[in-house]
Length: 331
Image (cartoon, rainbow, N blue to C red; front, side, top):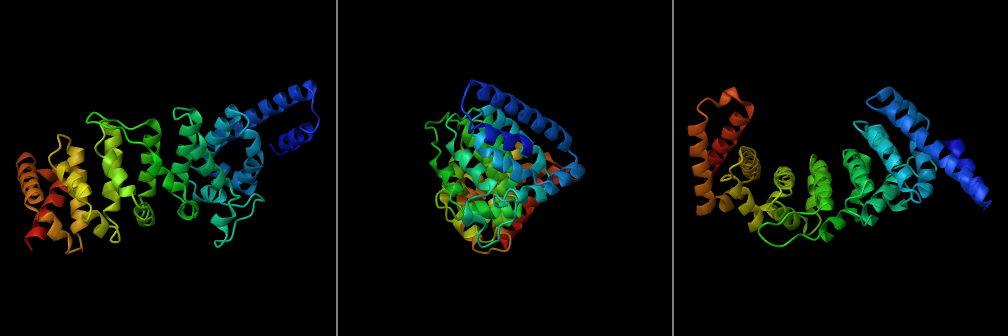
């Protein structure tokens, strides 16, 4: 790959039809090399470690301008990076390296803007065709990267997440979000898996309202992902006052208790319990007559319909959430 890159740069200085054919041949060789490497790295940590030592990411970074000119090569490169970064934190962190292949110091890591991580974020915000394979692949890669502390730090110090607020939500009762909105939701779900990510989401003004609106969408899968994000951010102590102060968010969570879906009911119950846990001020909001009625009815129904909850872990957890909510509100 290094050899092909050097040859492509050299040949680009010699215009002509013959050189164009040679360039096409080199690009085909490059694609083949990346596909072969992708196959070798699949679920193989030893190969991933070897690729890390061989500076795979700096090589791909140097080839990035060529990838931007060729969608097929870009798609293969992104797929390679998705495989490389899956369940491999060291590989994820290497995308934060400077273009020279050396780790950036924490003080300049995000400011430099010359890492492959920055290029990936830039690509995610520039693609206009929301159904393109490249867009799906770049968000898949970002979903891997945000599980890494270093990559999450780069995102936090950039304005990348502001782009989530620019998504247009459809109007009407039968609304459904766009494909790119679904990709954003999946990315935010991974970010929300840790407390630092939960706080990162809430620090952007308007994000909570956007997520709450997406909780109301028609498509059940998108609604489920949005609810899980809302559920996760309820666990951060720093987020609780903001969530409890948002009437629409509390309304969505309490309405979950009346859903036809058991999964949605559990998400709502777990979220309300998380808000109440070690936070006395939450009682004031959740003792609202309408919300309290929903809680009591849900608790009564679950007790009747699951006489032996210990036989199913999810049913047992559901009942435990409601029991704790009722106990905390009665204290």
